[in-house]
Image 1 (tube, each protein chain N blue to C red):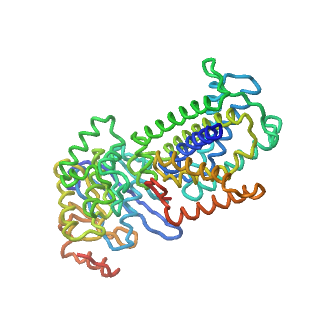
Image 2: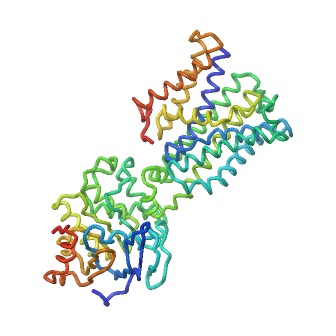
Image 3: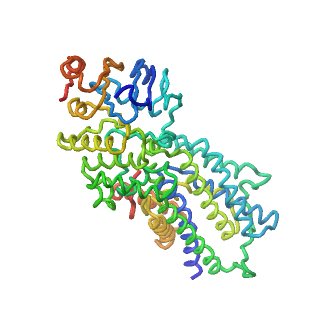
Length: 246
Length: 288
């Protein structure tokens, strides 16, 4: 996919520090139009930090973010208007609001109510499981449904790029597979570029076009998704930290 | 009968205070104990304009509300960046500053002597000198504030406030500049509190700084915790119950030297029980 399409979003030479700890060191990644990119690596590798730096949730000590090739200063509440949405880790639904209200909140950047209604309608076609639950408080949904809701909420704004922070966290393998199927479907039918931060390597490589492998705050490999298998890099990165999950 | 009317007026005033504070605390999750400060600004500005300039009541009240809103807007520009307990401390400071100004700016507020003989409002040639007539004004105001608060709660603005209450960072992620929302609701809350202040000043016809202490803010806060945070009904029921509890103590038969202390004791005890057994209050949807 690389080179065929325009570069949408890029992180260049980014470094992030938490207190005195270096969480990200000179990391460069890019997302092209319409592709699925995975950020993989063991716990503490800096995957989520890289995603948050892209979105402006954590400040960078060095580096820059490019959007359509131009430098931008990422501020979380300005990103959705650009067409970038972030789906946070841990299925952060607004528990006391209904499913429908959660979806409505995702549509802040839309110009009018009609677009909001239409977009929610089309999101519900993707996630028919949410339809009978629209009036229900989001807090009572199951883990899988909450994950579908957070992704659906991210889609309401009709973004160009969707940033997913560990969507598989705390879900059973079967549900993870369903979630990833949905992500692939979204990518194919709506031409939305997706960045997935993921711990569970096998399932994410099955849907990603390209992947970055991270370890200790650095990118240690970057290839097309099919080329990781058998390269030994995955095993090395994960075994070094003792947290391989397949 | 006069006494019952008096209690009813108090319930209306505290109902307005409860509803307005509930927008800030219950709907948005901002723990504020500065409400008596804004209540006081409304009362003082209205009283000074009525006594000093003989201004029309509604005009004076409107200016009191605007003054309180401006103060809230200026200050929340600073404190709306704070979160949780830091915000709380900011509001404690705010109430103390407001109270100190009422107390010490003697050339304007007459300090501890207070402002006496504030005229009761007249509407359409009808003098509201009678308490019953004043009750209609207070009840109508309560009804208006109730509808405003229900309207805000149901609007998309209210939904964003609720989501800030749950998770401010996640709300920002969806494109909402949350500090503006916090600033807006804090200002609206302060303006509605000032409305209660204007009514209070003209009802009692005398004000002094002791009505606007941090204790008063805590009292208002406890009324809505009792009624239930995040519930408009609760924000009226809570004040009603606590006003009745306070007033009811007059008839408990304690000798007058200790009646006031016993009342505070019962109030404190009621708060502890409430926190132990019903932390969400009566109709609460949200717990701090």
